[in-house]
Length: 127
Image: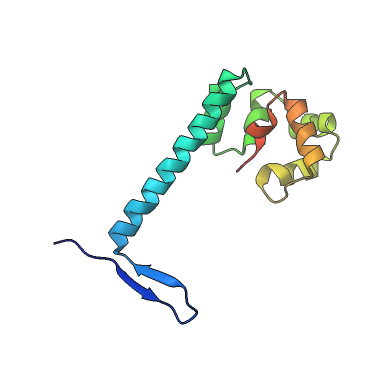
């Protein structure tokens, strides 16, 4: 006999459900899988529309070397942080902060970075 979720209403009126940890993990994994499917479909549509993809080497840098997307593209292009910063119109220190995730950078700068890397803007985003 399986566990039946318990339903109750919190003092503030919120409807609540209590699940086993195993059932919660199963549902979270299913939700993660669904997000992956949506992301894959979005990428497939970009490819169908002729949008530039991400080279395998860039992906390998991100996975194997745990680089941020910007750092991976920069390494793929054989550029130093100073080179990229000059091309994008910012300081090397600021670019370093963006690459490390300590800063985000304005949308205009992120577009300039993508242009300097000859990379699609969406491919340098961490999210």
